[in-house]
Length: 271
Image (cartoon, rainbow, N blue to C red; front, side):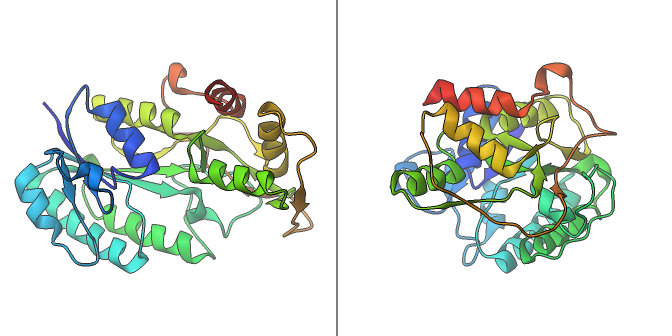
């Protein structure tokens, strides 16, 4: 049986991945805060700025590591360099959750798996550094899963949106931003497939269609029953700019393909 270690399993995405995978695989996770995990023998405390990850790796001996870490960028880079060394030595696979921001210097079109990465943002540059380290491994030993904006009923983005709207504060929307989206449930199902089918390489895991940021937020608020929410239009360009990751080479089966309306409908069902 595959033995999976999810780094950041106490977070929003990591927790959803753990729930999706643990009934089918020997699954373990790390947490940074939260006493509820301290008595769970499948969870290990890990502070990437102070702890030695090799102690956990030696104890679990994972065949697949999924990185859903958040936090200090330099500490994340050092941690992933250690993971690359571990995967090279143990012939394990590392699945890294990356971001559409690795392409944020290109704004005139959507991005595909093997397009050149280039970022103007600190966040995007940090993700590129980790991607570059992974690509030093044989392809069978890594999956780079690039994600668009992640929504969901308990996602940080939805919590922030509700906070602003409930306080009647203006929530910023970007009418010139063209994007695609996902949620933690859809993402977890896709990662499950990638794990189960031993997929490798680079995957773009988002909705198959594109939508402007302001339109998507308005559709969410309308679906959730908010009337006349206070929104602030923020224009960053005179033209549409794209921050979207679409698949071309590494496509998933039809039952794992979805549109932005599926994300909105799941929000409605869980509201």
